[in-house]
Length: 562
Image (cartoon, rainbow, N blue to C red):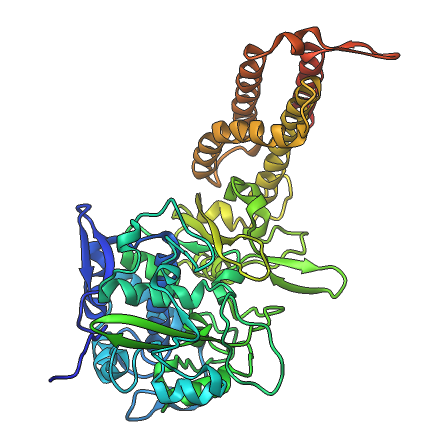
């Protein structure tokens, strides 16, 4: 009987949509050879697409940090027979060489043959089965790393995780049934090889903490919840998959060359896990983008997978600026930064409302995401023009907030588009500096949103609701739902040639109209109790109309001062 094989290099497993809108299943060789013919990744969910995107970027970063667009190694390093960095002359390292490579790739519209050569060289490390199964470990390695009573046993099945839990569109554990899922109970544990590969990669990035098995370690540790789970991701879109891959191919090494070391290049997987168990932040992007959160071993019984999983230590994220794809928040007490995260309470808050987290506005102390700094460098170097429309996206799986499970409770995806010249405006006059004026405009808009929330809260009090604030939070979503698209259109239409005050006054007219129309909807639904109102000592009668007048005065004052 021949050994099983499913090699990611040659077997189709990546879901894409082509330029005609047709879904295709392609191999690694196909995706790099024909990326310009594909519109985008098209997996089961956006979180999966982000995980696959980072995996593809790990390959590209590894290759093009070693050779140029023609496949020739850079003068300041030497490669060995395995295409790995043998030595680097840091004194001669020239980051301009990397920018030139990127620029040539941008203009050529396809990746060079060196990618194919690299994948063929490491082809045996990309097989989902065999001696070194991809993103997994052998039975012997698994048993060596876990306590003896957690060793692989097909009768007890201790430490197993179900397919329906790894599948993040279901995320069903043995303790709670997921009712509204894309698969019926009969098919929750059914899959094909292409799908399970996609989910294994995704699971490493977005893992809960329900595992009962951990790797053995001399020190106690918290189990990793998956690196991407701890971020507020931000990445760039492109007109096709090729453009998206390039825009996110961050080759900015800050004057010191970083040797890329994805796990499949190490001699043995034990070498990788020895370092990974130390829970140190990876020192190179390829390692970071492919970081394991679990050791996984799959036993195949009658072609059905039984998945054994053991938790690895959580990596500390504070100051981990090696990560390009996240916004950051400052810890005022320690003067340190850690990645921002999204939570259930942030659902429904559009990306543009956190504009200042995505670009460092002069005078602010925010830490700009690395991928945004990379795009800024491309603009400053003249590689992408001022009028190039940059589309930034965010994609998060948001946990249930339960510290003992951290199971996915929601998915959030959003994007905004803005020209490079506006986003990275070099104007020194604050009155003309677009990012600061945009941030002021957003603050003005949100003040009106807050006034609308207060108006709705006052109505909730009139109705004697148990939680007027919760009622107002639901109502204000309508305000932002009406305002999101117009604001995104206004934002994407800005240019450096615009008169700043003229464009902002245009937006004021839009937001005034929306503030009026949404409030009229509340007035139209007024109940008898809202109209009659209540009598307060010293204040007379307050009803929906007195609260409306207060709201509208606030709107007009905000627009005047904004």
